[in-house]
Length: 66
Length: 443
Ligand SMILES: Nc1ncnc2c1ncn2[C@@H]1O[C@H](COP(=O)(O)OP(=O)(O)OP(=O)(O)O)[C@@H](O)[C@H]1O
Ligand code: SF4
Ligand SMILES: [Mg+2]
Image 1 (spheres, rainbow over the protein chains, first blue to last red):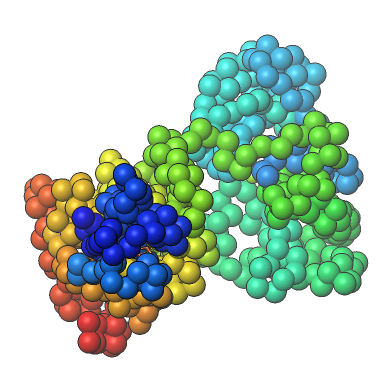
Image 2 (image 1 turned 30 degrees about the vertical axis):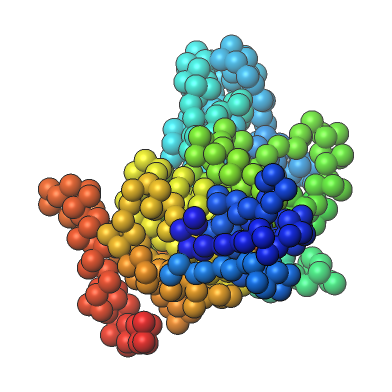
């Protein structure tokens, strides 16, 4: 988990994993065993651009930890 | 690009400015021979890419070839301001009546070349002129008209020299101006320009710098004179600078680097080229002792700010921190705050107990402030000027060092000062009641 931002993704609800990898400008998503996962070391780079949520509103959520 | 004295004098010679006889040498034996050629007495001058050679012992008079050998041996081993002495200029000993100052540089505000002249030439010019600014005369040059004889006359007349010397001086002024324009110099300075006892005007020293952005059209003819392009800081980068460069190069987005090692105690993480330079100037003006210069701008990723902050905070000798960003650094306040706070946490520093003056303004500032609040860092917004932030930081460092002198450990001193600088009392003391009220209201 990041120090300032927590990003959560539900791979069951965001089936097109590559798409998330492609749209996040700061590499917060990756594909592991065909499923989307959060790259923890990049979480604090999140810019709140909201693209991931627009793409998969039910499956992605980011939270400010401050 | 800065030229050595001997190179600068090659250019002056090309423009017909009178110079003392001189011979460039690289060994003590050559120096002895050169002194003999010059009549048994000469000035031995360190060739080095920095100022203040005279005061550092890099300029000596040799009264015999043997003495020249000994002096050259010593001078060639010297480093001045960390810069190595690469050669020695053996120069005719002038019989000095007066030391004058003449320079052509660029006035960034007027967007014109400016020439300065003074009768206070020599190694103490800065001190003398600071006390008595009226001893310098300035003349600006509209690029459409360039140099005009009446301007050179006005400048020379300011010094009230005897007629022949005045004429000679006018000629030197015009020639130096032409050189400056032809060679795209940012500085062409003759200090001292000597009036000899027999009434001649001779350039005893020369310092020329050429605009780096003009090197594309200057390089070839400079090469033709044996003057090669060189980095602007020829000293080897320090470990800190190397690591900072590495960190900055680790990602193409934004800048969090261009770090320069200054060895002081105030760590600096300051935003954007112009903003960094002015803040840095302010730190020096308030008597501060910066550990480093750096630039943060163009929205670097958090990890680059983090990397830089970590380097600065763990730099030996750093006792406190100034984080200062202006709106125009085009960097998000929250991303910078994340990097700085994360570096502190990783180094085991409690941000609330560390002495830091934090001034941030710009995009996502509310998020940035929320982060700083959470970690107990006193921050300032755009109501506090960058200059004022520098002043607070310098005073903060003074307090820490005072406490250390009282016998407290650095850690104790830092803890106590970190709390004190959050008080209204501190801000009032440093910036006055009115400013304190304005910058603290609502924070
Ligand atoms: N050829 C010379 N003959 C007599 N005196 C000289 C000569 N060259 C220099 N000096 C004396 O030495 C002083 C210092 O020389 P110079 O200006 O070259 O070095 P500097 O100003 O200390 O170095 P820098 O320009 O790097 O700060 C001069 O102000 C002058 O008094
Ligand atoms: S909000 Fe933007 S930066 Fe943050 S995780 Fe989603 S896509 Fe990436
Ligand atoms: Mg000089």
